[in-house]
Image (cartoon, rainbow, N blue to C red; front, side):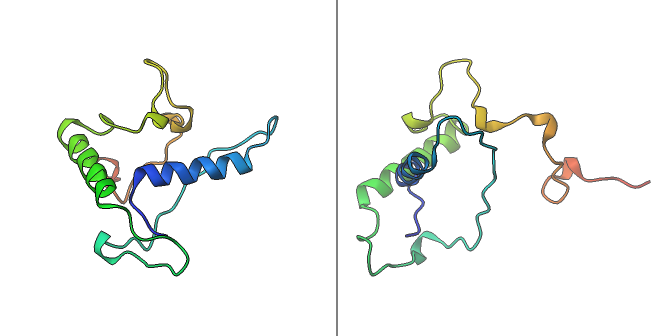
Length: 113
């Protein structure tokens, strides 16, 4: 079921990780490609899942987004995503290995003279 509900996405990710995690195994960071995204008004319906997100949850997500737009990205987030002060999230990776964004950032565009 398609959703933009952060609470639901974190819940599903935690369930998947509990099923996949094996102590002693080495894991590698991987990316996720989001494609085929649809506007909120065109949510895909399902015969087998409960109805759409409650109006209360939709208001919560809208307020979370509004606060982050007003005060800066990551100002308000779910407690499951919080780290101790000064601790860097291990899943963020290291900036020196990042690929230049030639097609999405004007600053990364190559100039030929």
